[in-house]
Image (tube, rainbow, N blue to C red; front, side, top):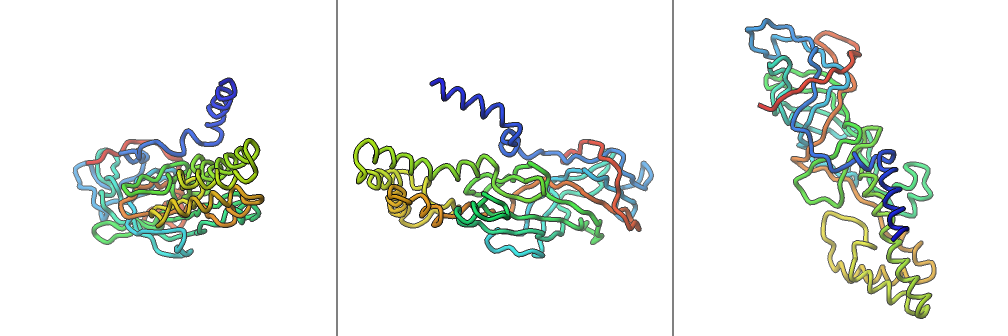
Length: 303
């Protein structure tokens, strides 16, 4: 009991450092955070149409978008086009700057499929991370009139991906603006096989060495998700595969075999998934350099 309390206290204290408290679990904000001092060139009585305004979107503006182009880290390639749409109206001073539903055009900047767990543990690239990863950058907002507003926008750090679909595990954004499973999800997936191996080892020590694979097989059949690769699609013969993998876990050197046979989670983005983008650079009409104005938070209510 005392050991459990110490472990719980350690997780509570380390969660802000690891990002576990904010990487997932927060609802997608229903408001865009738009600077209140963005320059709009129109008179108070004039409708804020794209043709009648000059816009400078300060760096740091946060905008919620809905994905329109399904993506998977298993098949995505760098340079693939991505489309999304604005989830809420963007307003400044009570006037609509860009309406809800405006299209955003972007591209894939990084893609790595899920790897075998053993390979991830010896690879210098994304060391110990067997899950997939996708990097995105959006380059323009297209208004209903066809006008393109150049931007540089990437997924916002630590923002969750909100999905109406069944997912293998929750997704969030790392400090490079790349989408991958949350830290907590990755830790769970890496430690699950240890549970089966530990259970089998305990049975082998307490009963007989021959009991280890039998105990592992029983655990794998009862809880196949502990030993199989995470997937959104329910695998066929799930319990049979779990039983076989669990039995291997109970053999000498079986843990290495299961690590070489299983993969991490693929990152899948579906239609209607929502992510929060952060403006890293914006261009006013006729400008040739990105705006460097600091972001000033202002609410952007959904109409």
